[in-house]
Structures are given as C-alpha cells and as structure tokens.
Length: 382
Image (cartoon, rainbow, N blue to C red; front, side, top):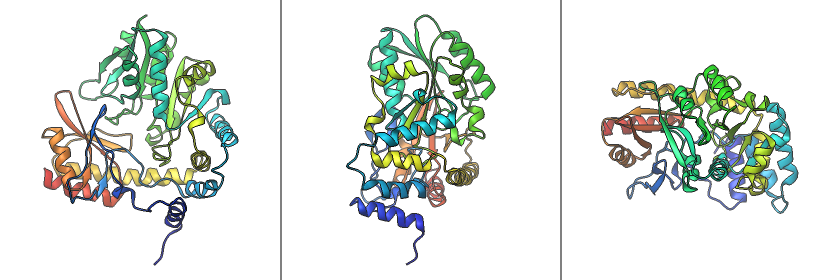
C-alpha cells in the first residue's frame, strides 16, 4: 500500500510515542455548546464523527517540517528546552521587527489571555474591560472572575463589525483594558486596518489595548491588518498570536505575545512563559514558523473549502457573514441547541451562538470530504 511522506512521518511519530494514528476527525470530540464552556457535546451512541467543524482547527497541520522536527526532538525529551525557546523568541522578534524582550512565549495564546485578564483585573480592582459582544471571551472570563466588569459593546448593526467609535467613547478612568479580537470570533469579520490602527493610536495613549490576532494569517494581508506596528512605536499595546490555526498546532500548544518588556514581565507573573513548553512543541514551532510553502498550502485549501461552504449555504437558502478566518458564521432557522444536536446526529460537529435576537451556526473549514459531510448533513437538517 502506498503512503505519502507526510502520512509516513505522522505514523512514525505517533507509533514512536505509543499513540494510535487515527485521523483527527474520528478522535473523541471535546466540543462545547457555548463559549463559556458548559457540558461537552458528544455524538449519539453508534454515530461516528465524520467532520469535526467546531473548534477552528487546521486539518492540514502540523506541517511535514514540524512532524519531522517532533520526531527528531522526541529523543531529546529528557532535556529542558531553554536554548530552543531562546531561538524561537529571537526568530519571532526578528520577523516582527521587535526586541527579544518584547516576545513572551506560552503554551497556546489562551494562557496569555487568561494571564492578561487576571493582571489587568488586579491592577485596579472594581474597574472594567471594554470589549465587543459577541467576541472571544477567554480574557474577559478570567478578568470577571477576579472581580472586574466586562463592559460589552454590541457589534455594528447589520455588518456585525467592532463598533470602534462606541468602544472609544466608553473609555474612562475606570477602564483597565480595551480588548479587540481581529478577525473576530465568532463572526469572522476583519476590522478595516486604517480605522483599527487609528483607534489603537488614540486609545493606547489613555489605556492599554490588547489585540488578539489568532486568525490574522487568514486575512488578505496579515502585515497590513496587524497592529504590531503600534507595539514597535512604543505604544501601550499587546498583541497575541497562536500556532493553533494556520500552523496546525492546536494540540501541541504554542502561542506568543508581543508588547513592551515591562508589561510582559508583569503579565508573566500571572501565567504564560516558556517554562510550560515541551521540547517537541518548541522544535516544531521553530520548523514551521517560516514555512511559507505550508502556509500557502493551508490558505489555498481553506479558500477552496470556504468557497464550497458559501455555495452550499446559498443552495440551501442560507445567508452568511463574509469571513476572513477559517470558519464561517451564518444565521439558522431553528434553536441553536437543536440545530447542533441534529447535525451531530449526522456525524457533523458545529457550534452555535445567539445574539441580535437570532440563532447562529459557526462552521470551521475542514477538508473537502469534511465539508461534503457538512453539506449532506445540512440537507437533512434543513
């Protein structure tokens, strides 16, 4: 039986670690009904997951270079990976045009969001964090648990974009932090880069601004849409990035934050830091960080899946929000929980939201067979 090099590497690594080389689509799902968590949604007895389209994962990663690096690094698992962490910080700093002290590594960007949430909640108890609603909630949940308020700013009517004017208007002495998720999760909408940079210029002069760029690589021009330039200018700005999306390393856990050195040092006391990173994860990140060939491949396959999804939704009478990410959000005709459960009965996992008086479904972009499974399930559910 023929087997391509990437599959051979994957099988070799997994067998070497004593793990089953099962396709990701058939692994035990850890799916949630709401951003806040709740209980996991499992398929009915006897139903296999054909398409896991609920966690915004990249089904084409880790890249062949990352897999090779993992295989080579596994035998060095007895060593602490400090030197490789330093190499990765240097590589990222050079790529982003900042100093190494302006990079904070962490096991995924999620731990950095939590650490930032706790830090900014405690610098001024009783204050607030200004953020859009809906948006990715991890930072705000951590902050609220530490006693401050999430000041929710509804998205713009119809376009479902960040309402930057209203967010800026609400900045006051009581504001601890302003959080922006760009592109936004769950809507997939990307903020106009000129408007965002002007907003960050003005607001960061008054209060710290945190921009979560988890999906920035899926935009038409990541450098144009990023606000790392604002960090370079010395502004009170933090930018979070992750290897979980375009690099396909969600399960390996790697992320980083870009900011001013003193701020990163203060946040690191609450969490994050390279100490929680494994030898295999850091070596994989080093291998794939500048793997332009794999990034282009992932993007091209994502665009193919997204266009197919757009056409599928149109054919079934649905509208959708234009996405700059690896997922698409569209309004549904039934209660969200019911829609998700019925799709799960077809072996397809998706996510649901409710806002603006409407139930919505978010679908991650998968392989073409996974997207076809979604299309078949949607016909039945609709």
